Image (tube, rainbow, N blue to C red; front, side, top):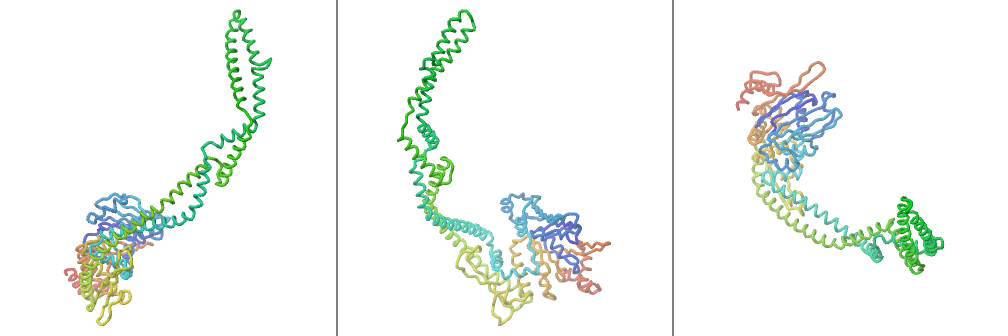
Length: 551
């Protein structure tokens, strides 16, 4: 229930703080005093949109905060699934800054507007004059039956399963389309993969082949230069090694006379050994070099193949080409596995659909069982509300396929007069009758203790006399199982409230502001007397007002 409401800088409200009790409360005030402003502020914390136009003082932000006692309304799943802290008292807060930007909070945690609205819908229902339009909505009509039948949990389970069913059905459709497209491409991909596989590409082979071809293509020049190097190093009359040998001999001869000569000679010997080894390596390479036209032809053909494949697949390296080959292999494997996936998912869809039909059948049975009692209670209440010849029939038929609400199609059929055939509410009920129908439905739902709070905005529109008293009795009865707040112009309804709040305006200098306060018993008598006597309060009006309160 809504236990406290705080409003700052909203429309004509500078600041107000009001605590609402349990049970049935009424709000009265002159036309234009700001009752609709109060309702607009409450709508903000229930997720309605707002902008900078609601700011009374354009230099500061607007804040609306509602404190709700949520202890007994089974909201654990909502808080846990949305990672929100849950307290005994839940605070919904909305802020709108000077630029019109909005921020929403649940227990001081920032949330998006959708999440605020989702929680607000489970805490408060606002019934305005426009709410009667939902009477003709099939989803609303089924929700009424489900609420009364105690179907809330099973319908929620069904909807979760139905959403899963839609997801896997959609996934199956995507797979079927993909399989069809893939089959068309399979031959081409298989050809490309076969070509690459047949090529027998090995990592790094292109660089090796290019290097080998380069050597073979210049074999004569390489062999000539290597032979010349061998001649200069070791085989010529004045080869480097022969001359170094003589240098070693000379240094050896003087080493006994000069200490440094021996050290230098050791270094020369080391270089001599290195050069001798280099000479052998050069000779070995030179012996391996030979002209091989057949190998050149073979390498050229191999490289041409690799270059052509790279160009065909629009890649610049052998590594990229190998990657293309591997991707094609994976794609072909996926195509081959599509049939298996489609078969498995088709089985899941069929199984899920059968389970949904079973669950929908259970929902339907509970709906059918509840309908006679709903019809009976609606007729009883509508008769009390001044429609003595009323007839109601809730027609439930099975649709062709599953929907979000199960397999049922519903029609609320109504007749207010003898000899008039039952027909859909939208086609036959007057505006006043639709208002009474909606009040009747809200009264039914309240008996199941499904909503913490309901706010009626001028539910008494078009109602007077004895019927107004009946409306008041219904609202008071609803207040036994839930919090009911009614904005009213009728003294009969105002007199039935357990608590009475008065909305009024004050004007100071150039500003007008809206206020609200709870009335004492004497103040209530005076306010109701004003409603009875059109402001000019008479003693008779005061007496009648006191009698209304006593009743």
